Every structure is written in structure tokens, then in C-alpha cells.
Length: 155
Image 1 (cartoon, one colour):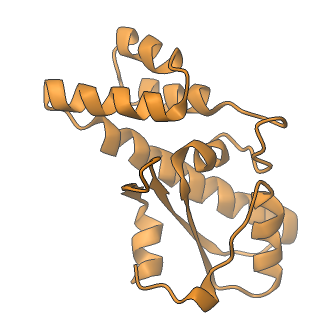
Image 2: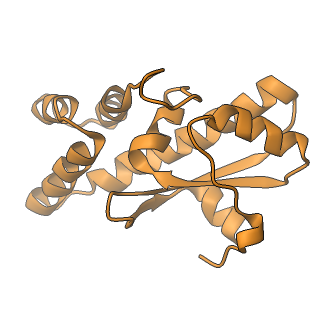
Image 3: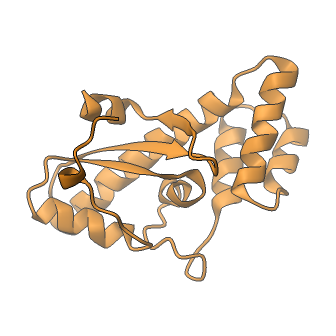
């Protein structure tokens, strides 16, 4: 993606404090690049992402699917998946079978929410306005989606 290693920070489960620290260090923009099953928690306002603290991955994914009009039967399938990866695979299968675009639509809205919630989190904790973008990938490290802010940040 053309990002210098000197501009990267690997983080663990404490994404909220990392966002605040980066903002206090006068970082101009932040690109969150990560596994969809981890980053999706930010869309639900969960900024300490360890699974022992909070989960909600499937609930957040199902809520976004419902908001975009996914039929009830399919919502129940997504909600009852064992993992976020299984839910992503279900949406991919729906797209393949029905020729629809649920993965892009749903994950596009999720990344938009991640960006917005992250920016709000930063402002709430240190009154800084920082552009945040997000890129989500699957278990095979294949990019699922880049947010509009991510495209702007990447230039």
C-alpha cells in the first residue's frame, strides 16, 4: 500500500488509548489496518477490544446488515454464525448466489462507522480533530474494504 514502516505502529487490544496518544503526539491522520473481526468492535463503540472485556462482533455486523435491508432469514444466519469470519463467508456466498453486493455495502457502512466513532473517541478524550480511516482484511489477509477516509489518507 506504499506506507513507510516508520509510519506504522502495531497495537494490541488498547485501540482507544492508542488513538488518543497518537493524537496528542500531533499525528495528522490515522489509518487503522486490521482484521475485520477486531476492527468491527470499534463500530460498536468498543475501544478496548480484548474478547474478555467486550465482544459484540456478530451483533454489530447483524445491526449493519439489518440497517441496509438484509432479509430476516439471512439476518438470523449472520447473527448465529460462530465467528465474524463465518458471517463474512455467508455474506460472500449470498453475493455469489444472488448476484448482490452485501459484503461491500455492509462493510462499507461498518468502516464509515469505525472512522466516525474513532474520530469522536479522539475528540471526546483530547479535543483533537484527527482524520481516521480504516482498511479491513479477512483471515487470509485479503482486503475486504477500504473506507473513503482511508482512500483520502492513502492519497
